[in-house]
Amino acid sequence: SQTIHQWPATLVQPVGSPLSLECTVEGTSNPNLYWYRQAAGRGLQLLFYSVGIGQISSEVPQNLSASRPQDRQFILSSKKLLLSDSGFYLCAWSSGARPTFGSGTRLTVV
Amino acid sequence: GENVEQHPSTLSVQEGDSAVIKCTYSDSASNYFPWYKQELGKRPQLIIDIRSNVGEKKDQRIAVTLNKTAKHFSLHITETQPEDSAVYFCAASPPGGSNYKLTFGKGTLLTVNP
Image (cartoon, rainbow over all chains, first blue to last red; front, side, top):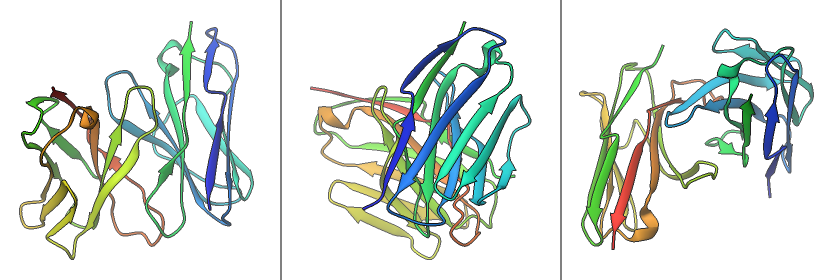
């Protein structure tokens, strides 16, 4: 069966520091991969999605970037975090089916 | 792009009552409408979904209805239980093969009082 791993679960980072969140999927090949952000008390906002290695589509202009160095690995990065980057970051995957979410990373920028 | 509106933002019901959450979407090309349940601090989990070629779908106490003409869809939970308490999100996705690019509503906080 397919599983999705996301880490770390929580992260506290100072303003201006870099960020790297990682997501991996097991049990499937060539999945579609997504990064969503959920701000406190708000809905889920699609940040990036990828249909294959090296193929990244950005939905919202921001100081975040995404990369897919391997088929089942999706990375969310930032060179310099802003306070407004705080939130709950969720990776998701789909492969001819509805998206399934990872357990999320709660990022607090201080 | 797609825009999904969800109402109400909060809903409180007594155990055993029914709960209804409504969503409207803007893109008439959207053809896939899932509903997710998110408990506090947890990941959203799919509870039911419907495609545009179907008007209604039911799974035990949960049902979803879709009106393509009016571009709205609703989640119905019958015989609510305290464990139904959570935030519920509707979403819509345009056609795109297996690439489900979902646009979410802002969520409904459902509280079921014992």
